[in-house]
Image (cartoon, rainbow, N blue to C red):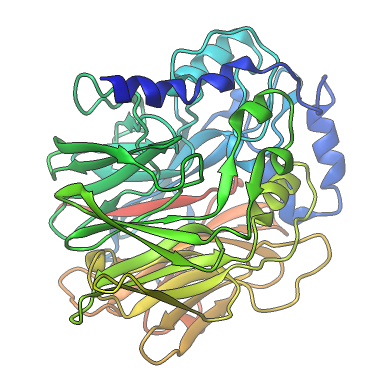
Amino acid sequence: MQQRREFLRAFGALSAAVAAPSFAGSSAGEAFDAAVADKPWLRAFKGVSDATQDLRCEALTLTGDWPAALRGRFYRNGPALFERGGQRYHHWFDGDGMVQQFSFNGTSVRHVGRLVRTAKLRAEQQAGRFLYSAFGTAIRSDAPAQGPDTFNTANTNAIEHAGRVLAMWEGGSAYALDPKDLATQGPVTWQDGLQQLPFSAHPKVDAGGQLWNIGTSGQRLIAWHIDPQGRLVDAQLGESPYPGGMVHDMAATTQYLVIPLPPVKLDFGRIAAGGTPEQAYAFDSREPLRILVLRKDDITQRRVFELPAQMVFHVGNAFERADGCIALSFVGASDHRSLVQSAVALVAGRPGPQRVSSTQLAVLDLASGRASVESLGDAVEFPRIDPRRIGLPARYLLNAAQWKPQPAGRGSLFHGITLRDLQTGREDRFDYGEQTVVEEHILVPKPGRADELDAWVLGTSFDAKRQLTQVSVFDARRIADGPLAQATLPYALPLGFHGNFTPAAS
């Protein structure tokens, strides 16, 4: 497997770290505490420690009218462990992953939060210090690297599929967890010979339960197809038209995989040598935003479309129109400040720059090779649709959003959610208020109902005044009315990235 070896070699530079974090010594935590003393919104970026790595609450405090039919498991994942042995990471993406599970039985809500026991976490627990460089932090260490999973933090997304929870990172294996108690089962090898190949954090599961995903490293790209029973159907190896670039999310239509390739080059070797993210990750506005379209059944059949330069993290959806074009929604920004400035400032206890990302609607003409894009001019992130509509036309797009001036010290954090009707342009939105930091929300279809608006909107938020995390439930038809109900934890969770809902078996 020559291509597999090349995938693994692409991560070798990370093991050559020669510099230590700037937050060194026993004052790392104290420095953060001092930085956020007058910024309550940022205290959730403190994270957890080894002493409090598992969280459990058997019965959250409920207010409002909790829907009896909302039964199942709501997962969240994100970086949680930022400090160890007097060291503190520099970048939000660096923290070891912690999966949160909220279990709903119709009358009560239970929470379990556990750090994913990756090989990295276990090695560093034993050593009592960080051993490996991360996405935005260099660590001085002579610890040997054994491939991508040496650095795997499993900190970006969590989805329950085929009876296990997959905690996913960007550059290595998915980690399997037991849905009963979130116990770590280990890295997933889909087939012998494919160990540690990148399995990205944004798989798409279609209405039939088929899971589609990608992975990239350098010029190499892999396309994954996993069946509803969790078995590998196919793993196709190919090449990226923009080697060394950042690839974070993708869409899956009936026939195609659609992959945005923003003009951002990642130099992990420079981080390992002590460089800052601004020095290591370059946005080239002279390069286009490339959209790579691959046939699912043969990724050698592909088209590359070009749009004006944009930074892209997240995709809303893509589908094939009757005229043969692909409609694609995503969130784009004019530069990569969120990657190299905001994500660094937050874990240092500083507000980042104001948000500049907005909803983009692109049309990709497969016949002519031409592409167009329209910006909706909002200030949003974390786009989600009805999960039953993945790869199909979806009328409604849900986002965490910002539309009001924010207090000093809050920076780019979200204060509300918005559900946009892509046919009419109408928005239904709710403002949580300036004391709340809003995380990604998702659409959860109501049992036995088919319309996109026959759904609940479900999401977490951080109450900065009380320093607590809440789960809110809205009726998708009446978001502006506010939450139907809220479940409140007796503690705060680290702010996370992504998650998904698994309905209880009927």
